[in-house]
Image (tube, rainbow, N blue to C red; front, side, top):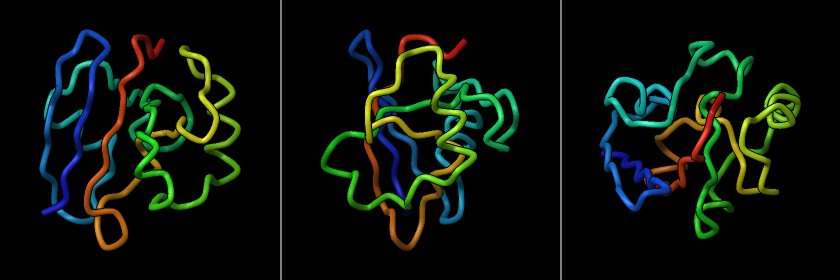
Length: 108
């Protein structure tokens, strides 16, 4: 079962196991992970599911699409190069069985 590890600025960690096909944002919202808002519901229109993917997982991610690229310019916490992604655009499953992310201190 795919697994997401959310690291929080205060030192806490949430570990969430999900079914294949579930986005990182949806997993966070449905499991009450603090710091992930998901205001637009996964349409890549709000940047409130911004996460910083840990370096060792970057090569496993799909490419950033145009909509995601545009929204990453609007994040409350400054973008951090390739590490910054929208959780709604990262789906767990075949190519991504596990991912670790840092949750920014602010989403709005």
